[in-house]
Amino acid sequence: MNNHTVQDFVVKGKEVFVGLEDSKTTWKLAVRCEKMLVHQSAMEAKYPVLKQYFANRLPDCTIHLIYEAGFKGFNLFDRLSEDGIDCVVIPPHMVTEPKVNKVKTDKRDARRLASVLENHDFKDSCHVPDKERREDRQITRTLIAVQKDIIRTRTRIRQFLQFHGIAVAIEKDQWGREQFRALKNLVLSDPLRISLSVLLTELEQLWEHQLTLRRALRELCRKERYKRAYEIARTLPGIGWYTAIRFVLELGEDLSRFTSGKKIAGFLGLTPGEYSTGATERKGHITGMGPGFVRATLIENSWAAIRRDPVLLGKFHRVWKTTGSKKKAIVAVARMLIVRFRACIISDTPYAIGIVH
Image (cartoon, rainbow, N blue to C red; front, side, top):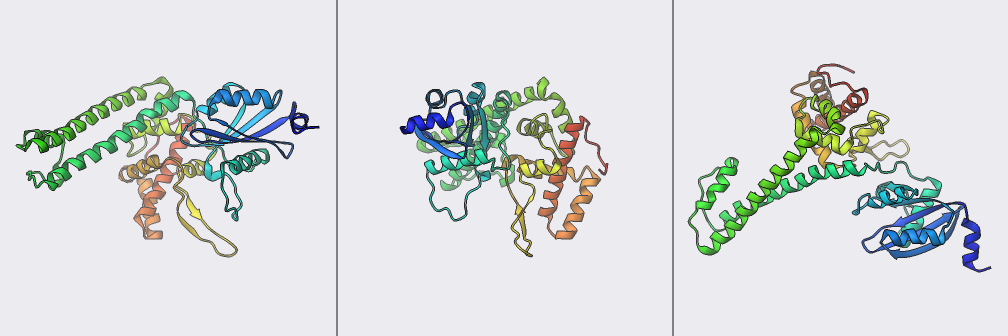
């Protein structure tokens, strides 16, 4: 009996567990069935090729597939789900691996993923937002990128002026749009004038892109799907319209997938890291997991929140007094604020200032 016949006998009509290691051009696969590795393969990273592989190698099987979240997003998950294949997307740091393992290859990773899936040796998989919300939230992520480009371009212009000794009567904290636009009137040599004109044109275009994206976000605030969650988010102290819609697009309009406040705080990396063994207990900085820009925005807005809600201010002072650190205190406030946000969304009630839960 040849290997192919053995494989058909083992997997035909049974549950199989497929580990897929993703890269730009190639997919490495490992297939397990009944605690055995039954096949390994490499193929071009195209979905029709994968689909044909399943049809040829795993006919009549119940297929479960796992791959690590990465640069390609969730398009593979969408296509597998449409074809009725159970798919798990796992954060890379959630996959267990022996501490002594010093060898890493895509082939080994595929085998490890298949084993992890078969034994269910992972704690949490990625929550995959539906395609509509993924596309809507791209607006806010693009806006973040544009805002960073604006800062970089502004810095380049000011460094350009300093490098060429061009003095302008503008203080460091007074640089606004009018001040940058006034630079067009500087009398410069042709090379410098051309260079500065390119930088100023780029800045104007970025401002236009920023305005377009902010208008699109305003429209999303009124979209029926997000409207109620957005309205509740706006009731949080220190939260403006921009932050509110970002929270809704990133976390979702239904937060019931977070079964507790601890879950949502952990998702945003607001829980302390810990390395304890035996009688030694050591807790460190927050884990920093999850979307960093959401966590940073939440902490920034918490400074405004403590000026509006005495309960949050009390939390800030208690932690500050205990730890002696304002940073730890404001992180504790941010954690409390996001936990309350989850409770408000689930109960469909606005945030109440000054209420101790």
